[in-house]
Image 1 (cartoon, helix red, strand yellow):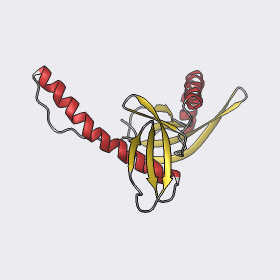
Image 2 (cartoon, rainbow, N blue to C red):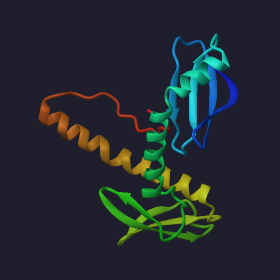
Image 3 (cartoon, helix red, strand yellow):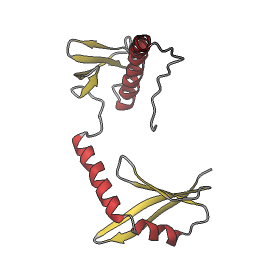
Length: 170
């Protein structure tokens, strides 16, 4: 069971390095740079704040390198806005998203020429993201089991159930 301990920080050169600490029944420390660049430290319950900060200070060069990678990746691939004109990949090709507001056809998603056409009730990014994600999952459930069976047959292997999930982490 994890116990969020809150935010901590220390000064490194001209930069204030802030991080969130979560304590749990573990024996070692771990440090992760989140996709938004924030730092998450997992620490044993018995470890003091000063020991955690001392350990973090030994990791500053790694933190600076990893954050630079994360921020460069964000610039390369900015977060999706889920609006018309944005480009999405499907089956190795890039398609332009076209959002159409419609109550009667809301929830429908499909490919027409070089576009992914999505019908939305509200046009809100959260609704569009959910509809698009569900569509991708549905397409994966149609395509992936066929391909897996095909290759399993070629290799003389048998397969069990195939599950498609929308994982946030592995």
